Image (cartoon, helix red, strand yellow):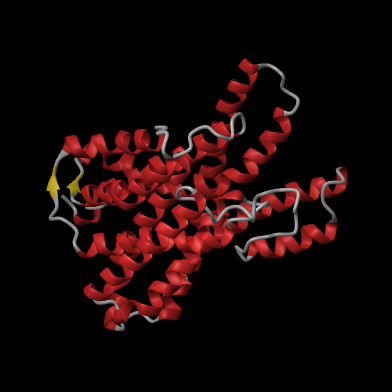
Length: 343
């Protein structure tokens, strides 16, 4: 087994989580209270991010082979092109609202656009709860950027003992969040935006711990195949006590899934599928906001329940298609150009 495929199951899990987020947002168009645990896919992303970032950069950062500035440049170049594209689509949609509706003004749009392109929250539209009105999915990237900066700032001093202390203290912060918000929440809306800083620290640095204490690789086709639907089912279930179970998910369930997934060598016959799931996961996640916003406008003119359900299926397919086009025709050429320039 090629060592490059060692963590390919984590790619597949990331893809599953991205599609759960898409399903979550599609269901929210009909019932805001449905699939209450699906939004925790973002917290699963944070655990994965901690693992993957540590896997890719920790040795270089701790040895001094990579400086903080280079790390930041690499992360921006990897993540920002699709943020720019999806946010630009959101700005174009909002421009139509300026032209044909009275809901927002041009100065408001210009201010919100500048903030959105910087992946910062916007509080200029008090009529809407969201802090990211032009690209709803980009909220998690604000906190991803924050925790990446924290990590690179302390990576060289991050001994195992210090890391464990950081994980323990960040779990205490997570408890404060749970007590305040009746569960794991915050970061996406205006009212609870600052709580995103409490939300991101624990899962990310647990991911770093999982990398440092990763299991020995072994072939286990049954586990490899089972973990994918297990993650989807866990995120789609609906337990009554969200405060308790959301904490269990982030504290135990998600780290366990990543730990198990990191130790499985995947059979060659499903490696390509998992790899493609991983490749499409980020485009699906970040591109869905503007597409679903268009869908919301169209849905206002559909009055049949059956047609609404069919339209949701069409939205799902549209997001996947747009994500694939964005990846192939926009992001991949940019990444190739950056690599060719030695960026």
